[in-house]
Image (cartoon, rainbow, N blue to C red):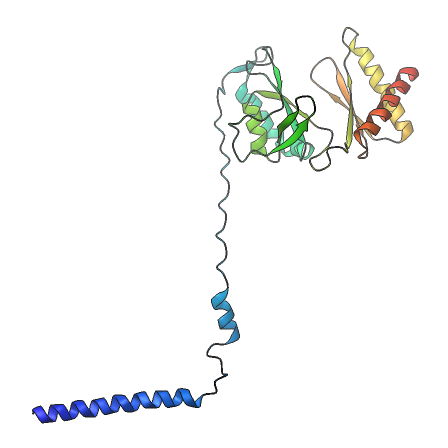
Length: 251
């Protein structure tokens, strides 16, 4: 039994050696230049994995003091202001697109103290777009808000911003305004003078073939908006100074 076992073991060893020899022979018989993988398989094995998909940015706004009265006579609240901006944002956003915004904030409502704000606060969320613009007056960069979506508008409304003042030019071409605005503030004059002046400006612009629009402000004044065709600031200022003088003579 011992010898028989050893014989079978030796036969098994010989069989393994024979099989090993066959594999060696097979490798030797193949051309050395034959690739072991197809080009597509080899290329795929070296391609880097695709980058992970970016998760959508969560634009959360912590609305505050929604029941605070902002318009005492009408009993409108801060929440009503936010709802209004939400309702009109679809039509408002094309006019805000890519333009720096200056805020007029009324933290205690329309009858309370108000103040202008240009600089975005340090606590503004990262998803709120800002653009740094050098100020000659303060000798530093001011980070202006830019509203690209509904959430941006609502964030500013939650800051108590009732009117939103936009630049006449867009980010990327700040020295080329495409609008010029003439503010018709009557001071002590009657509003009928504002109307007559706006009509005269309209006739002057129509004569020059210049698109123009009148915008009321909710106060006893209005603004006249004119398309300035992307002229440089200095050229636009000189042109509209001449236009204003012409309107004075025409009236």
